[in-house]
Image 1: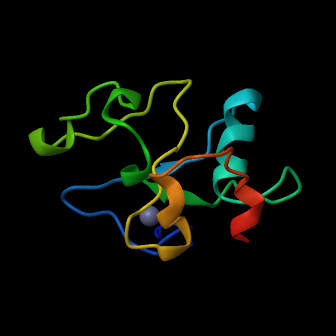
Image 2: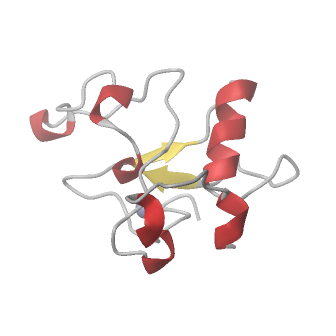
Length: 104
Ligand SMILES: [Zn+2]
């Protein structure tokens, strides 16, 4: 369960790491939105991989290449949708507001 990314199913690798949901309520809400979950979902065992985050979201984004662990800052939340997912291809020509719910 917790060993796979909830969103894409990939595992810990040499370039990506898996991240647990935050405990901070405000940040958590943003994670839930990104993953299309809600507060009733049990996210304690869910993880998502680091590809959804910006480099600046990590305390040290190069930690992985140095053999360490990538650690997210307290306020970090996922915002990058994978290019391979065609449902999110509209992300670039962002002409209007994007409702996450539209992609369900
Ligand atoms: Zn993933």
